[in-house]
Amino acid sequence: MIFRELDELVDAHQSVTTMVWVDGERVHTNFSKGADRPWRVYSMTKSIVSLVTGIAQDEGLINLDDHVSRYVPEWASGESSEVTIRHLLTMTSGRTWTPQLDDEMVSLADNQSVFACAVGQSGKAGGVWQYDNMAAQVLEPVLTAALGRDIEAFARERLFEPLGLSTISWERDRSHNLLTYAGITASGADVGALGQLVLNQGVANGRQLVPSAFLAEATGVGSAINPAYGFLWWINVDGYVYDGGRAVGLDHDDVPRNGRLVPGAPADTIWALGWGSQMMTIIPSLGVVALRLGRRPRYPEDFTLEAFTNAVLAGVA
Image (tube, rainbow, N blue to C red; front, top):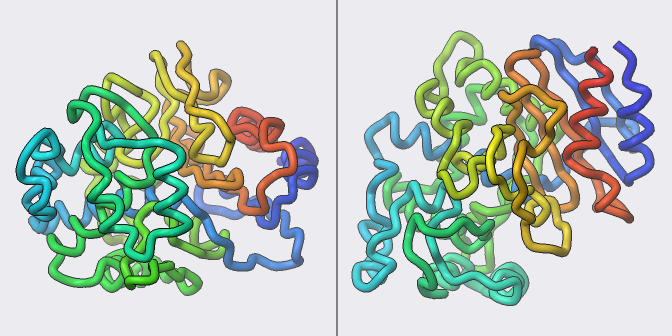
């Protein structure tokens, strides 16, 4: 396997860690700092929160069709009362969203969970798709209440420690709320182990850590409004889809178009994406997990999801 195209791409765009695994074997690494150092993965955190949610559901602690108002009482009246956990996971909650509100929560709010819960409802639950950090942050009070304990402690016990992950840290806001939309920092190897878990249908070291049925749903079509999005995971299905531009930090709204996110990639391709072009590509049919962590590219429009995925495919061909 020769990864010349991949190396040229990542080297040109301020990447720090690039790694590729095939059938569980690491076949390529590119470390600009000489080692696999922990890096903030931003919105790839959302995909990890999806796994935690699946474990919680399997243990009977939560149901995806629970109304959020069960855990956020102030949503018990009005249109917010119709929002379910499934709506939060699929970005179809209909919550009020603007770039300015999103920036205010991320940059200024001392209590980001309270801010996210208070922005109000502007659309019908299930009626609109919008990539929304605030909706993802609402999962913090929901999961905390459902678990009856700290989310990070639960994730470490049920997910991180069984996988042998040693570098993960999880940021909190100034009110000590876990950031469920973007808070995780981890090494490439640890992020890749989570990708390998998804590739292996939730099994690691002979243990079913995440239910396979949940993963099939989480990495399938979450809503007809945007079939390219599952439960906080991006997927490569045909349809009228929204791209992942906002997820990786492009300064535009997600652009709808007909087709697949990466036409040249297998239909079962899955992605976790984060601001600054943090990317993990999982291709179950090829046994591939690949990731890029690093600084925001100087020209992010040139470091696209399609370019990265196709460069990985060229290397494993």
